[in-house]
Image (cartoon, rainbow, N blue to C red):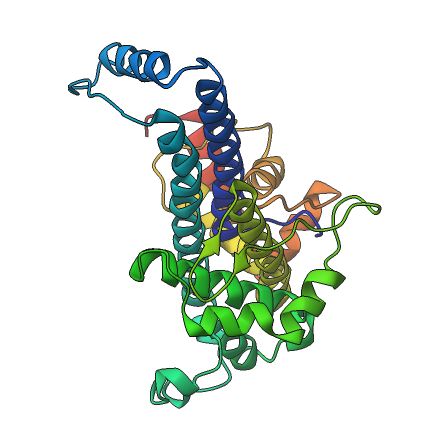
Length: 306
């Protein structure tokens, strides 16, 4: 089930793709505009004309130093994207936590009563509650903590570095994790992380994509663990409820028979494949329940408006 995709994972993966497009298109658009005119005056006039043609309810304004503004805009785009990534991964985490909460082996109160400064990272808490192998987060977690701290600086400290962020950036653990990062291409190394000093953070557009890639790699691991934790029958049951029991009409395509119908929507919703198709019936412990569901399927198929 290496292709399995839970709904939270699919939502995050889609957000990662959109973030990539947002950052890359926005960055090259800004760069294109930056190079469109040589003089500041001509560039300012061009921007004014584009604002007037935008069909937004904006009044054109004189931008005294448009090249400086465009240079800073790339930094601001990166900041907005970093906040986007944090929010998207937070949504993913909360959805996963909700799905798995009934499987926790440690009482929630054991962590909720701990002072925030002394708490483990929420990923470690999740892995502990589910008895998952925390070692698989090695090298990823420290980089994630760095970018989460960076996000807090962007969102709550006007983009100025905090002592916590500076400590992360200077730590041996963080530097080792960056050096050990495995890229998609063997001979390529990871892009350098943001340069942090006591007074500033040097951001580039690719940093937001790297942040999102870290979250995606963690989400991928959680996605696999979630499937192993819940098992295939959990998702067969969800498919039966959604596409048969809790609907008044079958979901297109209705397919030629009940097993093909289940298999199609299992694959469409979760990328789960079962071969041969009839093996999906092993979900049913009682033959009477299978007959009842087949009857409902055939009734809805033959009488779409019933």
